[in-house]
Length: 193
Image (cartoon, rainbow, N blue to C red; front, side, top):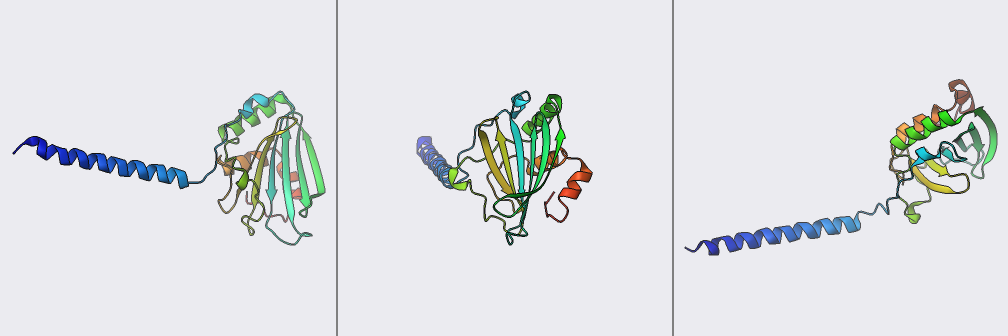
C-alpha cells in the first residue's frame, strides 16, 4: 500500500475542516453586530483643559410629572449635581462644589482605567430612550470644552453602547458629590447605584 494514498485523504479532510471553520468565523463576525468600536479617547490628558465628564441617570419610564433624572458633571473647576424633572428637562435643584486640576486629573485617570471612553459608535444604537423602561438608563458623555467627543449609554438591564466598567464609573461619579448632599438631592429617585 502506497502511503501517499493514505495521507492525501487526511490532508484533504484537514483542509476541508479548516475552510469550514474559517467560513463559520467570518459569518459570525459579519452577523455579530456590535457596531463600530470607537477609537478610545485618552481622557487623562484633559486635566488642565475646559473638558467635562458627565453622567446622566435616567430613572424608570413613568408619567412626565414624576419622571426624574440626575446629572453629575465634573470639570477642572467644579463638580455639579442636578436633579431634573420630566422628559423635557426642568431642573429642580442644583448643587456645585469647587474642584481643582489635581483632583480632576486623578478623576480622569480613574475614568481612563475604567474604560470610560470605550463604546460602540454605531449611530443606529445612539438613542437610549425606551430601553429598560422599568430600570435606569445611564448616559456617559465627555466634552472637550466645545464638542462632545463621545456619548455612550447603558442600562440596569445590561443593554447599551457603553463597553467600559459601568458599576465602577457610576460609583466614581457618585463619589464626586458629598454623601449627605447626594442623598438629600436624590431622595426618592431610583438610581441603581
